[in-house]
Image (cartoon, rainbow, N blue to C red; front, top):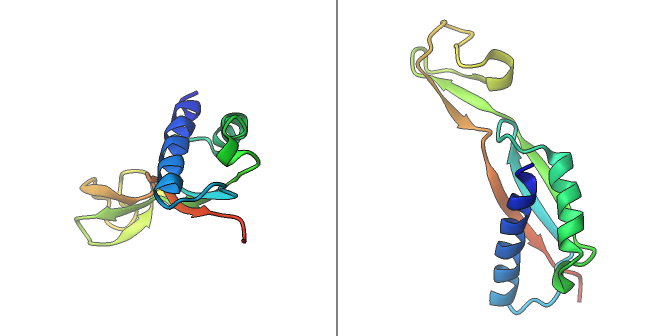
Length: 116
């Protein structure tokens, strides 16, 4: 389960951003997780709850996950298509000259702080 290691990196980055901005408490973290990133959102959430509650700044902080759909681009016909549904072969022209445009992201989108 690599999700726990990822959570430690998220916590490190969130704490650094909070400290840089003189924030004492973080109430929420919004993540963009790509559909083909190999991260299991439920595992990430479970690991988050365990690890975040060990940090005073993050105790009770909610992890929110946006799933970014995987989209592939075909160099043959210049069209985009759903990666998970069709794989590497373009459903329009049959070309295998394709590459992933999005859907592999693992990024912190927002850090939320409580209302003053």
